[in-house]
Length: 139
Image 1: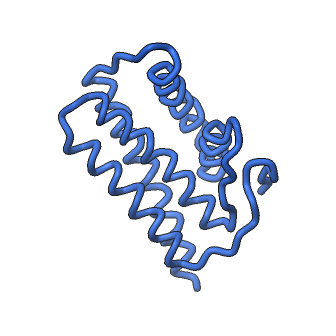
Image 2 (image 1 turned 60 degrees about the vertical axis):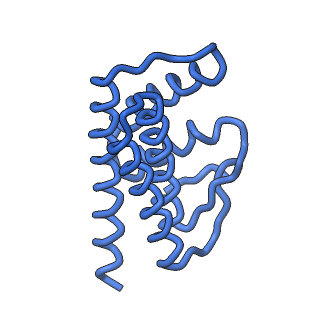
């Protein structure tokens, strides 16, 4: 596995912070599922995706550096580590939509989009959780 030193620093994480990162991502997804405001649903779903990436990176001994473009790198690395190109595609679609909201005067997100994004991130988090649990069982 290759990690870009510009975006990811080596760091020895114990089981506790990795599990805490995962629980944090799952909490954000739970908020997204429960809230009725579409912008809130979308933003918490996107944040849960990034935290899924942070979780798997911490599991592999990497800490994310705050540098321009780090969201792109988190999504790409998450996609690589789970061997799922769809994560890069849909994750960057979500990132672009979020950037439109921040920098281009807002965005419109539909209920259907929110449902699709939520299902997608739920699947990603399930894969992250399963990978971590499978490896931790061997130790």
